[in-house]
Length: 263
Image (cartoon, rainbow, N blue to C red):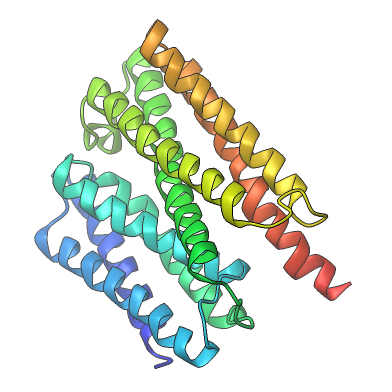
């Protein structure tokens, strides 16, 4: 159904606009209708992918499709965090991103199917979940940096007042990093077990960058546990590790599928 992506995008954007109005008005929380629209958007987003796969005779995991699926995961996670951790402001940032990713997939995606057995599909789904979770952590790191900067300058606008207290944001950041690190570890493990010739011509750079990202995330979590790392150091290491992960997956897919394919 070609209209599904547009319905989902409209639901995402209306939810974000209602969130902006609520935050600007000092309410801090999304109104119930905004949360309901976000849930509808996530369901429609997922349905659009599910309807395409039977026609493609398999899961479409090419560049724009993978980008859209990560956006779907981020939107679903941010909606859950809004209810569970009082972090409604996160959706205001993520919902427009998810809408753009879905529309890019609708207009430029739909590549040929990938012949993957259940083991490689498991590896791919773990990777997408890891990217979505760690992308949320990267956004939380940026929000944490903004909160600390505002605290030093004693300038708190309505956007920062809509966030939980700084200590709660920091706790949520490391909780999210822990889950994302576990998913990334599972991704690398299944890749080592199920992907043949992991260091082949098209995979070696992806593998090296992913392992480097895993090491940085691991060092950060150990530093937090052992030495109480926090603040600017946590933000820098989170963003560095996420940049490596983006280069590993989307950077390599962009070059292989969009640049080299058109050369």
